[in-house]
Length: 385
Ligand SMILES: [Zn+2]
Image 1 (tube, protein in one colour):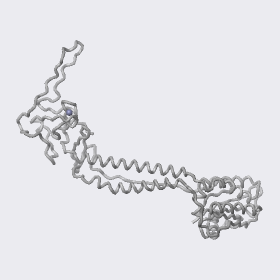
Image 2: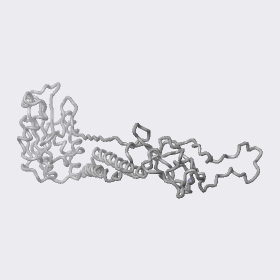
Image 3: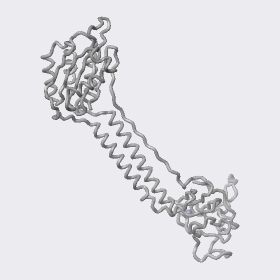
Image 4: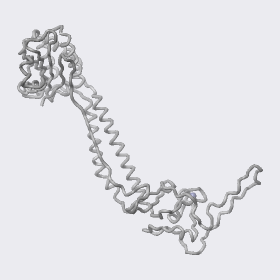
């Protein structure tokens, strides 16, 4: 169906059309949260030497399908990515001459008797049609011919296009003024109706020049209407059939692709986090971190046999295990081989730091106490990540 490519009137103001919009939605409840909620158990996993905590009411170790579960999401995102890339490509327009016009000769329908340069205008219209394959029709009417039957000249021009053309390769320019124009204010109107096939040739850039040239020429009122239309066709002659970039479409496509790419990366990160969470162990809600005596790395007693940061063997006291039970004992805490309740482990208690040389007089600090007290009272800490 043909559509308006612009229009105007003596009252000023033109019109044009077009636009884009898009929307998306999402979100689902995730059992994994960073803070406690009723029914949730606490878990710890180690990544890059540090413990990470989370709460879940579902055992994260059963989430074996986290990658597979995201495949539909990835497919949808790839489809949307392709849409964005196609939209971006369509922003680069390289017009091709149309070959679909059924009636190939331009037509001047001067019902109003206003065109006094028919020969020159016809030559210009024919040159335009030969170059582009878009066949122009220029029509003049009286306001009285359409007002009353149509609300706007655009509606009249739409019907006139359908009645005059059997293809989508024409461009129709309709000029209308009253039968007896008021010399103080000639209430003229014009409309450009273009077939769908002409969009790449009569594109945004070409139409902008055509419409502004015609509106300005008609407003000047220093020539005949036929000369004004001729001026508009002359103005777009250097622009037609030239490749051009539609910056609006291009900007839209760039933003679109950026958003999809961001979602893609975010989903990949989510999959990676799920895989790490699948290695988590349940711990007591009030389990406290301990500090590796060699490197200062943090860990939860009972979840590891070696420091997650430096790899040094962790030595547990017998009463530490009793003090820090794994209440969510879906699996028992990992214990060093040979562990027996109530017997001291093969462990040498750390000695207070020995000053290799006498203290300087100005050093007032007492010696640093051992970091692991023998009675196993939990150290401060246990922050949640
Ligand atoms: Zn360590």
